[in-house]
Amino acid sequence: MKKKDSILINCFHCFNLILILIYLYPGSIFGYIFYNNTLIQPQITQDFLISSNHFYLFILLSTLGVFAYKNTKKINFLINYLFLLSIVLELFHILVPNRSFEFSDLFGNIIGVVVIVVFYKIKKKYE
Image (tube, rainbow, N blue to C red; front, side, top):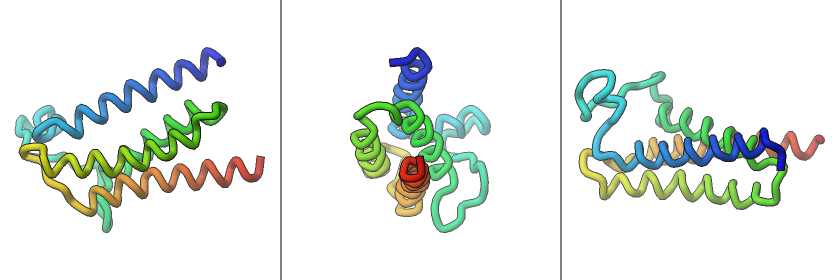
């Protein structure tokens, strides 16, 4: 394995862990940082049928994961993991205090993964 690939894999794992911690935190860490209020969630852009914050976050996570694992045999496992993670993390919002399950968030997560996976599959097909 190349050093560049191992650095990307470590970055993916770190980002993944941070994402999980942010998702399971009871309230908004970013709301506390920017507004001193854990009940307020900052918006990157306005939502459009799906949660834009969740969409951007899973675009970033999926991109990092695909770049990290594209030259390995684990890419299909990664894709399945990203889909499962996008669903499970949102379902955990049912249990986490001051968080709530929302279909727009769930669809933002899933569509963020789908966009990157489709780009990856198209690119791989024409290589």
